[in-house]
Image 1 (cartoon, rainbow, N blue to C red):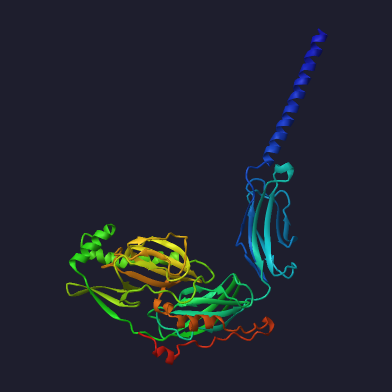
Image 2: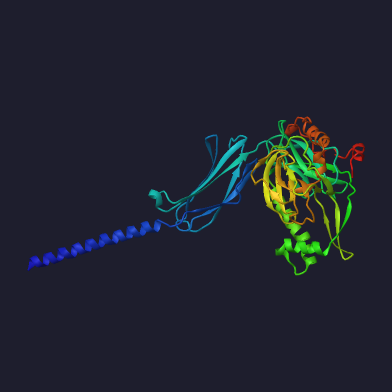
Length: 478
């Protein structure tokens, strides 16, 4: 009997011990699982600084939803050497989910950084037991440039014969390689490209057909946020007298337009024509600007542009008034030259370049656009057949298609345009070898004045006024 009682007591003790062990294990599991959170900490910089200049920096927001932050570290690495900018630890017991704002100052001189590339790395650890008790982590990494020398831009030379609707070319000097530079004319920015001289850049710019006699342009060079240089460049333009052209619309032509553009049918031939001539024109021009927004940085052309041989039927800048039943119903600006030759005549590429568009283009019909480098493009419209594709390199004089009547054309001809970064300019200048030599090549060859050291720099002044030469201007046809 006693033996049975001892057995029972031993069994009870074993059960109690097993229960204690299981309870302990449950507690451990509870504690472990409680420390093994399911989400990484998060990091959000106020900005990803891409240019590190004196007194630059950003604010870092960080937090962890489950276990709370343990450490936030910010480092800058240059040439294999790591510099610690911020190393902040957080005591235990903080509330999970709490957000902290950490200022991150970036003082390049204090950190011993030099001009050039650096890598910024931000890391956060939480208090979970993940990764062998090291915690869950999150990190952000991005590249930046250290800029210790202030950016400086200075005017060198500009085309001396500037006319409404024409092309201008300006040369300027930048004391260090910019992230972006160019000339702003009004609200339009025309990017610049490196030339042969050290620190020398050139930019082509389009002069609007309705530009006032003088415009306050501005040279701009940027290394990034907080490091930008500007110089005012007053420009004066020689005015042009544009031809006024009246076009009588016939019933047959309106019906032809309705048949060519059924997608714009307004239920009335005249309304359909007006929609095509205005709204579709705007859409097409926007497409052209998109295609010409980027291109080859170096000039691909050689010598003056080749002119398609034929009779000029309409000129660049013509003010066209459309008349229906003795009433003016629309007005548009013609932004190219219409040239008529034999039906289905071969169309040559005006100069060397890369085809960036070869497809139907609304009012211009089957069209080709060629990139000639440095923001210069040529456009060919109304062709019946295209013989090149986008991405293809072409040589001056190479056949790219044949003339036709596609688009808003009343007869077989070629519509030819020249564009600067997607903005139409007069093609006549580009056909003229003397203009190309005097207004572009000579300007590009101007010498550069050595840049003044920042410590000795004088207050910025406006560049000399660039204006048309009256004697040369009178010789130009209107």
